[in-house]
Length: 594
Image (cartoon, rainbow, N blue to C red; front, side, top):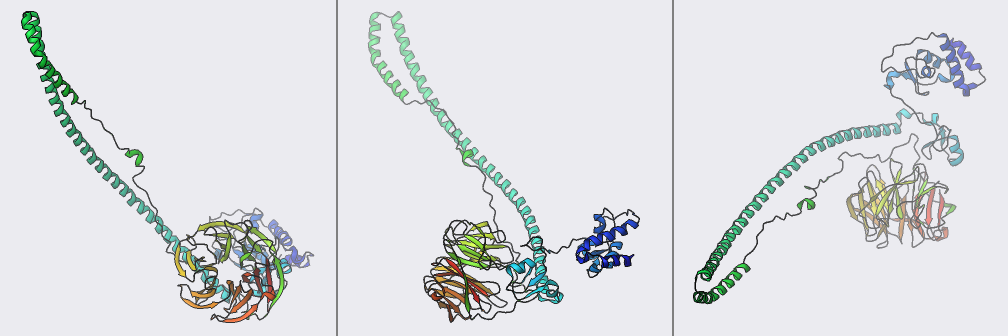
């Protein structure tokens, strides 16, 4: 049977392009002759994918890494019999541990096209359309099979294996840390509830004391009022008896005495009645009607809560350091220092000015325009073709790529903030307000953002929280550009101070100055592969090259080369193109580096 299948395959007019059709036809003939038996499957049995697609149940024993299918015994034999499939890689299904392994083979930029080639110049996988559209001038394009030779012993595999291991170990630490945090929060909650209950008991005890104090005060006041009331009652009763006695005498003489006796008695009573009237009037004036009331303080409406619950947060102790460099399978050769910068083209800027630009991993340009309100962050191709734009929450001045992600971050100098941007979709993301006055230049080093201010300071900020970790004093005016330089032995920051001393400074991450070099209005800089820095002179309309030790090496370009208030500068990934934005000319000039 295997010979028959092979003859059918080799004589088929469809050739290799008709593989799937012939394979399925031959395979169906085989299944037709095979009696169907339902097998009792274990719960973790790996099923044969081709059989499953025909509603058959067979246990897979092999896994084809090329077809990404599990194969039963018959399908494995058939797989090996077909000529075009004979070179496929088959492994035992036990190796996969039940996992699905899929390799992305489709081009992101061109639908329906497969990745077939590797461009060494750009260190990326490409399809045939990519070659025709954006890689025509690239001189190092190889089929993937050729480029992949020796991959198992390559530095890229070693680096990626180390990095994945580091990522895995970090995530394990993170899981332990987060579990510990969860447990800690549970314990803290129990303690917190006890503290609240204790505070409530203290309040109850305090209220009991206040109640006793008020009751004692009521008793004292009541006693005082009662004593005075008794005294007043005695006085009133005495007055009543005296006046009653006077009335009885008048009544007696008026009924039983002579008129002479009555006349004499009435005349003698006049003075006594006057005294009693004055005494009674004085007594009444000093008397009070007493009442005791309770006026509670409005504590219920004033006190809304026992207290406040505060969340105290500190940064996670788990640290992950992104690799400084992952080497490609085929290394890009170390470029020589460019000696010629030939004009290629100018790309007009219709309004505003380009203050900063960076090159993405796929060799596109991300540009900031701080002089317009809408579409002030743009994405271009390396040849200057506009792709997409978005509007951020303020005036973007500086921009930097967040390594290992699909994000960039910009400074918003008018609102003292930074904002993240998705590079793929060119959409604005989260914004973080920072305690930095008028932020300009920006760089990203691992989990930290380095931001230059208008007062000569450089702030090192946590990438997640926005908290300032450290502040370095560089100068006195605008730090307009910050470029990091990282290798295995050194970590430095190159900074441009525009205004003030007008210098380019190289410092370590703790603020130690390595060197300084004066330039007439240094606005932005870029580094080449040899550590030379290229600085735009905004006032002098030129481009300076400084050696790695900070000495003036050469004046590369001048106003005669089209520089007019040059601002931003960047190299592409292969360092064969240089981009300079000109404020007065409102353009971005592209130079070929040789």
